Image 1 (cartoon, rainbow, N blue to C red):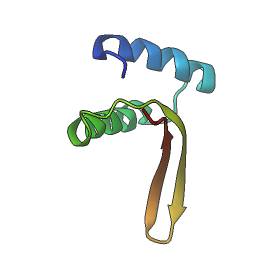
Image 2 (spheres, rainbow, N blue to C red):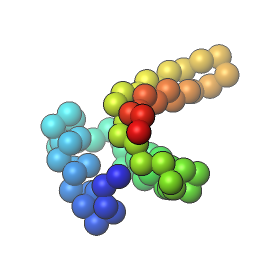
Image 3 (tube, one colour):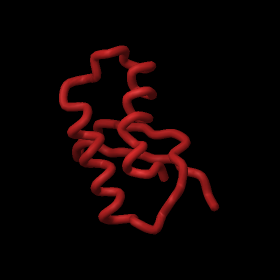
Image 4 (cartoon, helix red, strand yellow):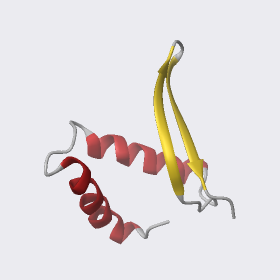
Length: 70
């Protein structure tokens, strides 16, 4: 929902509050992957993510996302 030219500044500001100056290794690559995938698969969905959970299951990892409803 954030314009691409403003996105990196908001990402840096938000995650520096969470992690300090040191993001987890490869953090930017993982985030870029998810942003590109969202744009590719769901370009017309503009919901705000309210919460998420990243869990490991017997089949692998699973991402649960809670978003608002328009």
